[in-house]
Amino acid sequence: MVTSRKGLVLTGSLLSIPATAASLVHAAPAQADPGTGGARATTGNAGVRAATPTQVVYLQSGSTGSYVRVVQQRLGGLAVDGIFGWRTDAKVKAFQSSKGLVADGIVGPLTWTALGGFPGSTTPAPPTTTPTPPTQNPPTCSVSQIRYGSTGSLVSVAQQRLGGLNVDGVFGVDTLSKVKAFQSSKGLVADGIVGTATWSALGGYPCGTNTPTPPTTPAPPTTTPPADAGLSAVVSIARKYLGVPYVWGGSSPSQGFDCSGLTSYVYKQAGLSIPRTASQQQRYMKATTNPQPGDLVFFGYPAYHVGIYIGNNQMIAAPKPGDVVKQQQIWTTPAGYGTLR
Image (cartoon, rainbow, N blue to C red):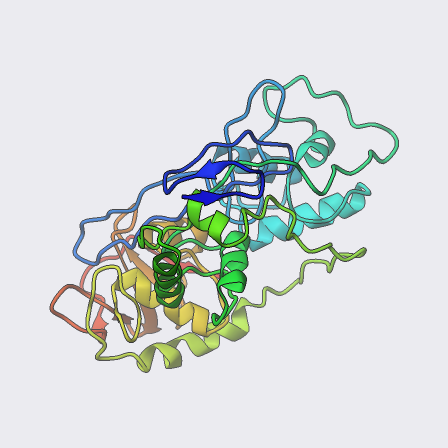
């Protein structure tokens, strides 16, 4: 049993604490889609909490769902895919800056108002003067779990507090091992899930107070996506892992790879960020009919298998249990190709 910063007695079960306007909730991504055709991915709206008539839904990088589509539609110039990726993040920040708002990339009450109001609400027209920013230190907030496969700022906070980890915002094998060891040392259930009790043992849930102050002048989105440089290295990086055994849910050379574990790991080594599962990667990436080496090839819709296209109708992939990462012919007509170019 652990006592939180607010004097509440917490156990290993998730405690629902009243939310304030500055709280952000992140849902953990699904596990990997196996290359055998049996997808286990689940869906959810990362960074979204239920709205009541008096509050709006906060969105930020990593969020998904219908509210993200509304934002993309109103901003214009974006693919309305319901995924809050880096392009949407850059567009939101540029919009906030143009309206004299804090350019933090978080779509909260003020940004919703500037965008015409939260869907279904009676939000009044934007005021003519710049409104006072929301308070930075809310008294309470809802606690969000993070676990293996999660990404984002909450993961970075946990990695920083645990120590001895690369603070990259990706909840991978090393972070999982570190969380379990920490939980065991504190007498908690060592399940690798950072929930209410584990957050308390780590010093308390961030509640948005660890968000760094944004620069006064946000950097404008680049005209040429930085993905091109990274994609040119994807194939050569992927070749390093030929022969690594297929392991369902595996996402590192030491652990083994499943299909999407390989693609996400290789892209990360190339300095590129994509979701963890095949179906999420398919939705996130831009479809192309002219694939280039380093792009991804998808099978099924939603995708149940994915590989790295290397040209000449060949790919590098983690095929199935009992097999290894290998270069192989694309044996059937794929559902399509995805690119970050």
